[in-house]
Length: 486
Image 1: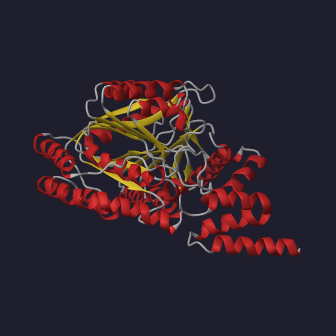
Image 2: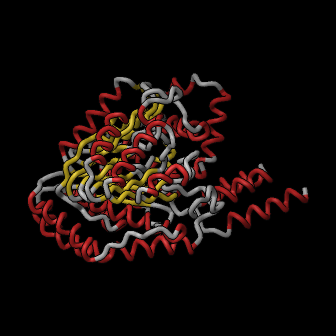
Image 3: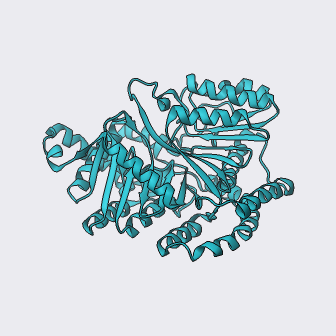
């Protein structure tokens, strides 16, 4: 009993000293209390928050890069935005203003978007674009595996570096298990650079805070071609892992103005990491700044296209821009909201928004995978799916392989595609980036893609869950209790 009380006091002290959500606090207290030693190890590696010093450094990097560029960029697009404001709905204006306020996301107008839902097609096009790069290729992925696809992409990057193209690769150590600095040695000998996000050079574990991941997926080529979405680099993402079979994801290839904002995002993440690795920073000097602004001005002046905001969120910022953007889309929906997410573990605000919309007669449909890639996460997803099904939300499981897409589409022309899932981790723990778009044709394409996926999906009903075993329901309930820390 004495040991139990001591353990409880230590747990309260460890969890209580950081400001965090009450649900997260109770979840960690439960783990630390009932799993004394194991729980402590889990907390040390996964539960501790980023230090204020780390957050300050990340914010300072963002401030130094963003302020001057965004001020000049905003001046370029303001006039065009004024021209289109009278043509967009109040709902679109509300969302774009919200995202601008939360993340400083500039609304760019001149973008051409190609949608990829198949990994082989996406990476074929990406490698072709890299093969035609003349100035730079900047790559940022949560997973950059050292398997067949990883080596294939790396070879294209090495060929680009050999041609004199500036190549930089940023990856997450936790998401790229089995990949380390040695994998990129030849690329660096050719003049390219690679580093793991906020980790020291040549180290596998540099901090016990393993719960914060670079979950973004970005590639920027020559400043005017950008990739953003859900695909990572690995054989499973092109359907070559028998465990998952066909991999269903969604990714954008964007040409035009928005890649400039992707470029800014990459620069901030790269420079933040350089503080540890001592690698060469990316500084936006006047020459580079003017080149980007000139490119942006040319697109904005002469090209019509998809209005788009590149929106970021992460544990360094308490504005939760992507999560609040999702919440705005759901709460403002009048006809339908279609959502695809591999992990359905929404925070209470999103959960209530979904139920309120469904109860108000909005056609709310959510599609999740039919198989787990993380067992605890999937059981929690099933628990939330059961609860939403009981509250008039239509939840489907995708039966044709593994669904990894992170998409939301609603109304005539509002959509979001990116790296952020509908779960606690994407809302508060991971560094994420999404494209929010305002275009009728693109929204219709994503809506039709969702409806096509319905042909290979099963609607989950109350009877479906009622027929599950008591043991499975017990596991779902237990995992739901741990939802804030999964």
